[in-house]
Length: 396
Ligand SMILES: *Cc1c(COP(=O)(O)O)cnc(C)c1O
Image (cartoon, rainbow, N blue to C red; front, side, top):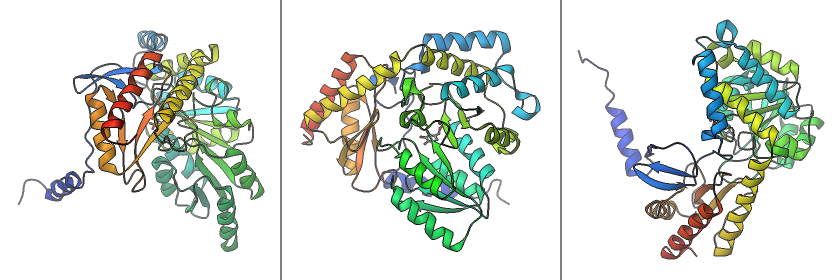
């Protein structure tokens, strides 16, 4: 009898990934998050993180986490429904609801688990989920877990959404739910939420938006995509993350008291996985304090974004369809994108190459994430590295 099971196939699979150029090399950081990082021992300008506002290592956020640890320790030591709900969790939820202008909010361990909690709580086998074809993996997984029929509609296309709803009505279903990313993470384009809402209302569907890349970025002072479109009180479910602009880790669902009450009873990651830790919660509260106190960070994020995109376009780069700080630099073939990224890294700039299957074949790109933490000198430094490598490779 063998001592262990035969897992030889995993080695073969891993080798296959390496041969196809699809193996993910995970780089190691030995510095805090910020405009500059130490990555694999090298100091590089950071164009990769979702640290939109520089909160991941903001002194006030760090201080709030330290003070909370001194007072309450670290771990919640239980799921929220047993002994894991601390006053701090409820304070964060009240503050998030007030910040977003909704009746209530509920937090989760991550944006991913927020989607895994919400979709199966709201729909089941007799129901239909209408989902943008480019929605995030956590929406796809949450949709599958729910057991509902999943109908994909064309990316950002309310007319196709309506056609799909009408076609499904012909065969009949109990409840319908429309779900879309707010900002799509690979192209930086935004869902036309007002038009999608109109379709959802006409057909009595619940509307759920996952605002992971819009939280702290879009709307007045970073209040998110619903605020950006002025749709307060009309979008049923807003999922957000505390892991991107908030610079911490966690997820949130904001909406009506009724939906939040239901998620406290039926959201499985809420019921069966432990609560956010004390320093995470305190850091998120400090983040809201900063955002409510001043729009400075959000304004700087957008100013940096405009400068960078304008200058990149001036150099002759194609920055795609982005209307947000996510700035794709379209290069076409994956090997070119990888080569570009490698040369930038040698020049001290860290920007990720993204290829198939994350984006379609022939649409490989670098993805530049702009942050309020970048100084004008940082942006200049990044631009000149892009110019140098772009010329070397004949892209511009
Ligand atoms: C990043 C992201 C998530 C996951 O958020 P985490 O808090 O990192 O788990 C969920 N949905 C979308 C659309 C995202 O972009």
